[in-house]
Image (cartoon, rainbow, N blue to C red; front, side, top):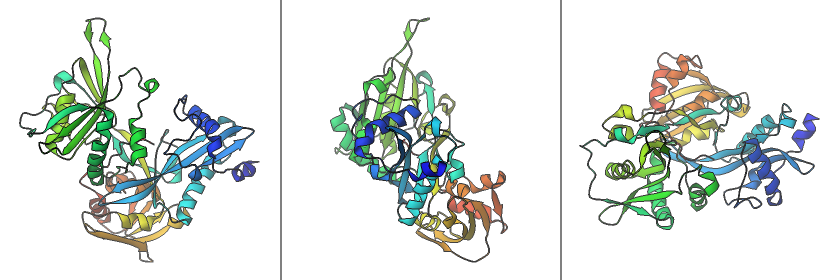
Length: 415
């Protein structure tokens, strides 16, 4: 019976989107709303989906978004794994494993994206399929009365202005395209993904206002920064005073002065006592722009999970700030084509990775290799946890240096 279920997995059609969405949303405890109740959204790629259909019901779902992700020193095609659900009535039948296996096998056999990534709803699920946390979010929170910019921060001569969405989106797109290539974990956004990011349905605001937008413009008219935010207004019944929260969706800029100027405005909004930036980088520059660093609390949590689909292509695609000439013995029981010894030669200007029969310098699993891929997780830390074997003395220290990156990986886009 289980084999029969697995053989019936197939892509969804546009006509099946309605029940597909209902099943998927229900599994995440959500109630779907317009505008895409019966018609797939522009970002959907149903030809890359897999599902189990039975008697008019959808019992399992999964999908892939075609992304491009920034990696240290470059960009690489990335399969964004999404929509993964299994109905409780068909649990423990191998459906999740089969969907994961088919996704990764197809990527490999069709020589598509060498890297896959996802946001994990539950941490214990995806490690057994080779995924590992590679980028984190900071969850910044602070009380406005304690958050003041340092007096030595130069704000420049640019101006910050409130704008409408029609003005904001094209200007923000240009700034984002310039800065995303500097931050590992950032994803390319075309118009479809910008529209999705700025979709602002009233029933999804959780009592907050509609999105509001800021642009920072230099004296020559060049836009060098943007911010999107909303306010959740509340009142303290004991004091009769406002206790509003400003929720920052995103702040990006191409210069320190633009970034600081945007935050100066955000920290000065009336009737706000708390500022939250739940999707901010754990190493957000704001932490170093304020006079009281302790006033800005962080709650670091895993965000983007990464999985190398093709070890050779993935390691060849990134750059290494320190020269590396090592052999890694990789263990990948879920994708056997990755198992074996790989010779990595790389430096700041380029890299090449291919199979070899040389003795290994380091032995590790695909989870560990995937975790360090974006440069934010230390190989030495994984060794200290007993998850990496050092064969050549000093190899872990040298490889940790080579795989590191000066910019902390960060992905502000959930999918």
